[in-house]
Length: 422
Ligand code: NAD
Image (cartoon, rainbow, N blue to C red; front, top):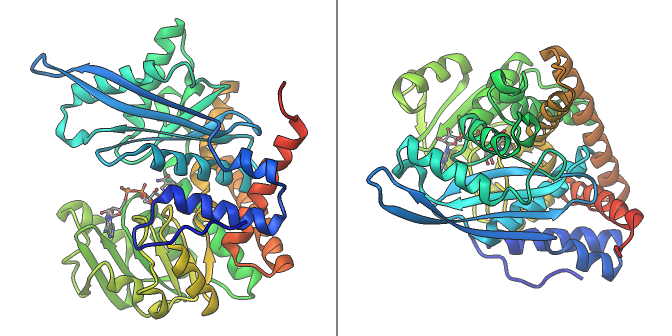
């Protein structure tokens, strides 16, 4: 039965996550017991922990680690540091990780973590102290066979190095596989930095193949010129597409005759923003979503495509490199207008897929070439796209519902096969 919770402009993402699950469960005719199991996280750990600040005062921070479902393998999901982190947000992100890992069929369950903190207000030493103590507090849950964190908002390869070191110190030897997204020097993987963008481009290539087109000459607008957005711009240009608009938190630029992604990247490195790039018009972050283009790549934040702008979006295909950029109401509008949406749990799953390769390499202490990584990523992304596209055609549902159906069915299958303990 679908949830009747109203959807507002900035919906509670836990309510949205449950609503999306309900829709897939309805379509799959999932039995009531399984719905009750999968609709809530399996484990939630809240920790309040002290950190000695640089002035020797003691602050207490609150953090969470949530495992939604671990029937298909260890939990997998990032850790974010943000002043607005809530338990509900971490629950939603953990549930989405279960579906994302299942849609690309890698042997992981879903998990997520977060600490309520604005790390920009802390010194590097304070962030290190916070990270090491948080890693210690959640150590009953994490481990290479149990739950494997990764970077998320405001955490990075250095944060992962500190968690890996802390966990290794507890055990007395190096355990590289406890986290992914590490620096290459201590067991990180080649190709991880580009993986999210590369995976998104593979899904666009699959879309082009399925619809009998090619990316050659297509006009692309990219909201968010960070890791995912800027690398997607470069890779799409390599496929012959033309980048006509790009933006970051300061605003956007539009050049109907095309932008050179490398030059835009160099401008951003020098000036801190894409704004001001020569021979381009300025556009706002809302206008960029509505520019005349064939492909729209939201690669910034949640809730960008809403019922207000969805009727005016001109792209034929939306590739969700960001997590949660489209509200459920906007989804329905885009579907009615025939816009093809490649949903986040499929489109940006290249990141977690190469994290999986990193973990496999760490567990085997044998490291792959970048070519092998990119080929294996292509294989997994192509297979995932085909499974979702087939589900969407067979059940006449949009790609998001289809992706949820593929994922929820896989998690439900694993849960059923294992049975309920005891
Ligand atoms: P990032 O921090 O490298 O880049 C984010 C970009 O968005 C920056 O250029 C920033 O200026 C811009 N931005 C911020 N607010 C904006 C706004 N209001 N309008 C337009 N642009 C804005 O982050 P990232 O790693 O590229 O992540 C981007 C999105 O992709 C997030 O939703 C993230 O969850 C998702 N994602 C990333 C990965 C990954 O591996 N990097 C994996 C899966 C999903």
